[in-house]
Image (cartoon, rainbow over all chains, first blue to last red):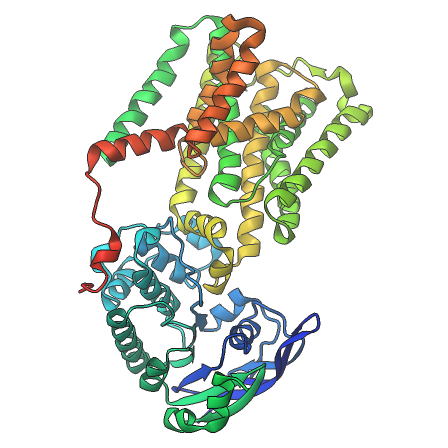
Length: 247
Length: 324
């Protein structure tokens, strides 16, 4: 299996605090990799460094063997890398449909053609299908800000998939979502994964969700990788249990 | 609702066309001022209301446009060419002014644009070889287009109204294209926008440049309208006034600038009966307005319309589990 994403000795320091301390791993094509770890272990910082939202202090990020360290998030997205956020990140004053069209429009044509082309950038049907796929049809024309938390979380995920990415990084997709909605989200993620043979990396605290979704799990504590294995191995690993429960 | 909106726009357009036939010259001057300043306010509404980038320099761009036309037309340049030059020059300078917005936001950005505004004023005042300094430039002639002389007040008003109509349509087109969605995304959540592949840098610069060019085009009509321009016409006062038009009308609402500019041009005239107190009354009205309706006059109307139209809906949270 080839590596879609390869992270080598990644380090990120904020002043004296080292949030990510020499992390290396690779993500294979088609897998669903989970990253778990206690609060403050550097998971989100790791994502932000991989995705160009933060500049790493040291180390390398490669996507499809191409060095992408320090590239802007919008350019990475154009390479087929997409993400969701830990905290809600939709556009509250746009409708659900417009949120989705926005998520795909920059992949259509050039900046000039988008000015003179169709208002929906030719994505009206695709947005409709995505809305249906995530079962948000009855809310398509509502403002995103008026949706419930769980529904916005679904929309957030739907937006990450709109441009048909090959690699999706999900930052706590289950955080604050009720159980019904959670099962629904997992089912949707599985369906997309099967349909597009996409690669996922998932940060998550909700262990049941990780166990049900991921094929391989990395454990991060205090900015370092401390364990790796199948979900079953990780659950039994004493090092992991200690990292979560404290010293 | 769309139909109702269309009817209101049709009535307003008819009123704008009919108005000069019922007004005295000063009244025509006022509605011409309204048409000209609305263009600048549309530009600021684009930069601030849609794209979320605060600018206190829109008045400076009106000045740049006005001086461009006032300097070029006496040199024999046709008005239409000078008009385009005013727009292009403002576009280029606006693009450059956009660069600080890539680094700083909100009140810091306000200060950067405020400093730029002061800079433009100083250039207009001190570079006498070019701008004639505090003595200003008088007698910018009104153009003749395809044999139509716009020297008379009413004719010039129709020229201004025609330009306003064209620029409004162009802006409307842009805002309903994917660009409009991108500008709103820039305002609402730039971090998310960039992660969805939006080149936020380019859109930010575009928002500044296009907004500024509308300021310049407004100035290009302002010079032949008032026929005497001087540096003090384009100080921060004008920028604040334009900001007021955008906010009072309804920031981020397409028709906000039209309403805001109308209020800003007419209200001081109506309040003239209060003599020396009119500024106080005006200021108090604005403060009350902002405290009770930050979404502006059109926001107020929309809220009232929404209350009349539909009873309150069930909250989204209850439909959570039943998402079928």
